[in-house]
Amino acid sequence: MVRTVYSKPTRTVPVVRSKTGMALMVVVSVFAVISIILASVVFVFQNNLSSAHGQEERMKAYYLALAGIELGYTALIKNTNSDPNGDPIYYYTQALPSTSSPALTQEITLEGGTVSIEATRIAVSGDDWIEIAATGHTASSAVRTSTMRFRVDNPAVVARENG
Image (cartoon, rainbow, N blue to C red; front, side, top):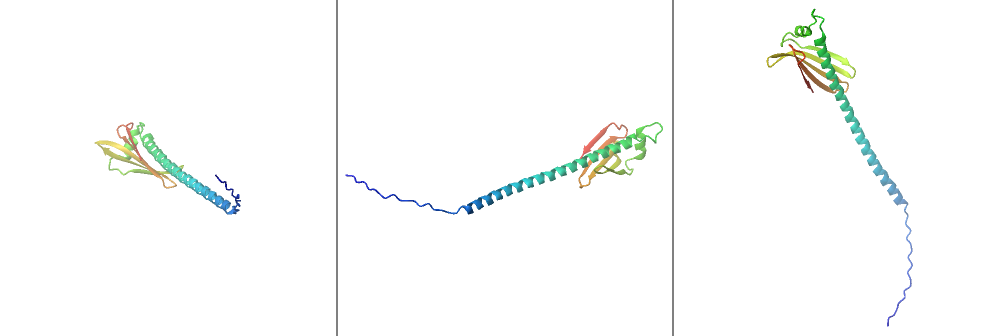
């Protein structure tokens, strides 16, 4: 025979605990995570902004140097006032008569910075060339140099080097 035993139902008493401390921990944790994410975003943004500004300044210096090359070339080629026949070769062959001639130098202030221009007469593989080197300087110390050479006997033959 099977006997059934009835037990008295046990009553569970709910344990009441204060949850106000837990809410504070959640709020502080969420605030800390948001602060870390925000700090990271600000750091990345500031770093990219600084990089873009440096790139812009280097580009300004590059274009200042190119402008200096063009100004120097134009001054040497287009200055035909000394020659009654208007021959453009006359001026720079007189201004730079030999490879031992001192360089012609000029510093010009343009929008965004200054450019230093130097023209010299050089010999390359037995040919005479005029070399114009221009260095662009911006206010934030960015510097770029470009060089251009043209043949004395044929100024249409041009070689360029950008730095």
